[in-house]
Image (tube, rainbow, N blue to C red; front, side):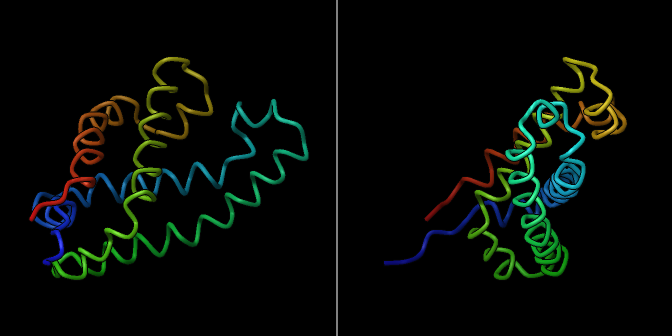
Length: 141
């Protein structure tokens, strides 16, 4: 029985999907680093916010590791294919960026606007995010 090929590796390497994934991972890291300033967290009890902040700080090294995996393997499809183990993590980063773009445009809250940066540029990323979320879940063979 042959192993299925992860189409996400092809998307990342051959179709330039790595760009939106890296952008989303960097956004996710920025979001986690500024977690305490989030309007959603400011309303949470201090104990709850502390636990969430600790969890966020544990996630940052995983982001750095994933970024290095992508950047270091752009020329090697077999190595890129190993990222299939990180599909759910890549989805988290992409959906975090997508949600924050939507919050910035829907609420205009300063935190989200500052977090996504150039809102017009970020809005252009929404379609790329949707494509990436679809493509990283595809397998063939």
